[in-house]
Length: 160
Ligand SMILES: Nc1ncnc2c1ncn2[C@@H]1O[C@H](COP(=O)(O)OP(=O)(O)OP(=O)(O)O)[C@@H](O)[C@H]1O
Ligand SMILES: [Mg+2]
Image 1 (spheres, rainbow, N blue to C red):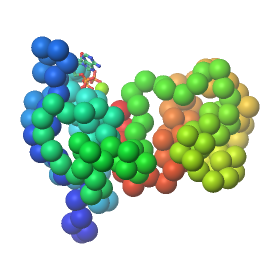
Image 2 (cartoon, helix red, strand yellow; image 1 turned 90 degrees about the vertical axis):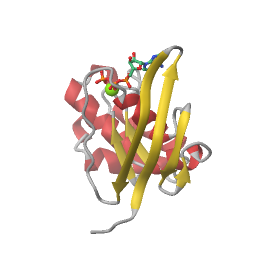
Image 3 (spheres, protein in one colour; image 1 turned 120 degrees about the vertical axis):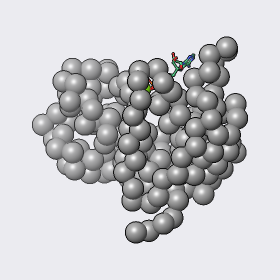
């Protein structure tokens, strides 16, 4: 087994005002490993993942994700991580294809339109290409969101 650590964080903590949402979480994840993260509602899973992704600055703790420092390397982390948010965060009033083209441009991908077409093929979204995202069923929205958050060939995928 490849022993390279892709996530190595220690003592991550996050407060929102007086609420301690995450209190000293440490974890190590190796390359190729599927790491499950379970806990009751409101126990701080999403907050922890947002810190690991570089989307939220911890109040305490340290560590590296893909070799980048979680405190100072957030832009490098975001470029290499696919984060599928808990709530649908694409545009309801854009079509499937328009959303994917937009995301490709956000990642400054070359040949953005072709990249969007590739994801549409890979995820079987061909028949819904021109459908407004807001009118998709829940499962198809999830599939679109998965395509959008992995289209930049991510090295770590983080659901919710
Ligand atoms: N931006 C925020 N501002 C204030 N409080 C927040 C914020 N985000 C999360 N919280 C609070 O932090 C705590 C942890 O929330 P979090 O969303 O991380 O939990 P979770 O484990 O992902 O829950 P769930 O299983 O319901 O998704 C909760 O008490 C929540 O209300
Ligand atoms: Mg959550």
